[in-house]
Image (tube, rainbow, N blue to C red; front, side, top):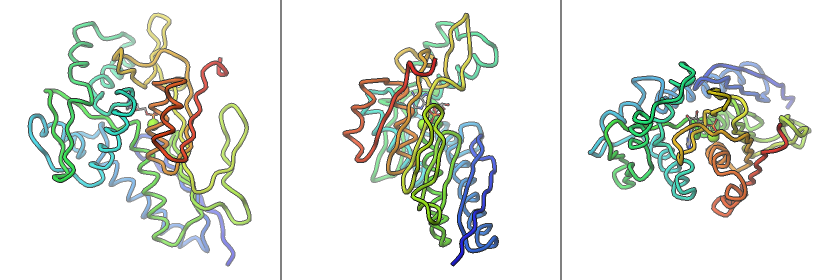
Amino acid sequence: MQLQRFEFTQIRMGVDARIVVYAPDEDRAVRACRAAYARLSALEQIMSDYRTDSELNLVCQRAIGRWVKVSPELFYVLWRGQKLAEQTGGAFDVTIGALVRLWREARRTGKLPDEATLRTARARSGYSLMELSLPRRAVRLKADGMQLDLGGIAKGYACDWALRVLHKHGITRALIQMGGDIVAGDAPPGERGWRVELMEDGTILLSNTALSTSGSTEQFVEVDGVRYAHIIDPRTGLGLTKLVLARVRARDGITADSLATAAAVLGEPDAKRLERFYRNAHITVLTRELV
Ligand code: AMP
Ligand code: MG
């Protein structure tokens, strides 16, 4: 059967969500991709911290001091986030939402928070302040004003789901990209993989794998000549100030996405040590080559 290439782009989770598929005809491609985008919309409604009525934000309001049952999707992402927090000593931490909000404020005003404000936000952050119960599929938060933030892990997870939905529609030759997160299914017909351009060293071929890039080079706020990136260093409570680009290949998008964010915070050699927890994960951290 002759397969044709189809490509679509729609905005999800604040970024371009690009889906490329090979399908027997346009009708099949459109139907499958429509279903995949619908799934991405549903996940955005669960995980977004921008939408006041997202499941994530409702949980932040309700779960202070008491158990709140959550959807399987939200529970899984929080669980994976918490595991990575433990493995990284909190370098990756989904409870840093209060600090992320301060960073956004700094981006708006061009000023860093004062010490008292920073102290308050730090007291509301920290993975030991979030409890998860597997038997109840529930979350409990220990500090007032806590804000969860899945910006470092949800896009990769969403890409995994999109690929799964395409599979259900009989499409296996597909690539999904959301910002710096890519999930590749089977290769295009007659090729060994999907050709993906890397920022600084050529192209690579991907099939049945995920690739994520995180770093401090694209989103930052500059205050008094110092650049603070959108990735928070939980040790300071402020954005990363070093120049770093982390790239992770892993078996699925949720792993690649979360490890890339973690690796950007950790830097070498600690980032590389994470590979032992995740089979087939390959972590690269570039720092100097960029300047
Ligand atoms: P990424 O682009 O995947 O590296 O994710 C960056 C996003 O992750 C930020 O915009 C925040 O929403 C969130 N984030 C920032 N710092 C951290 C951190 N230390 N651990 C987990 N998530 C973070
Ligand atoms: Mg990430």
